[in-house]
Image: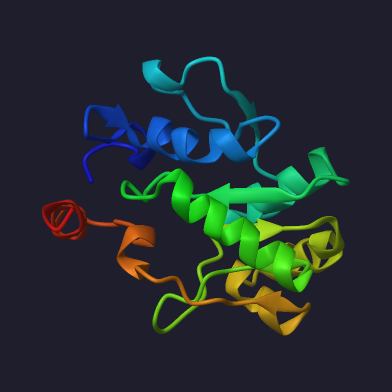
Length: 172
């Protein structure tokens, strides 16, 4: 992508600021998972370094659950430039409706562990997956994970290559 994804920009905002704006109305506190240099438009947010013993999204999720074990965490990856507060509200409504310990939207062929809700009851399973080297999608085999289908899965799309980013933003 040429630079870290959290520093990329769309609609005049960094991807970090886009995620923060979507989450802010639904959270008591916003926290960036991972030890990163924040873009100027997201300065002032707290950072929680990833958990030891792993990498990828699961290390950040494990760190969040260890940092505030009583909290319910809404996780939104920084590479989802189309996510809005509306998608976050939908995700929280789905999570509350079924009383799940975790909620990951179903995006056609897989659940999304990086736009999800994680409750306190999932911490032990996350730690186990981190120790075993498995990824966060394996969580659905360890605990009850609710996987609702969003009306517009494209809004929850992420970009891992310049081509994916162009396709995602070109259709916005």
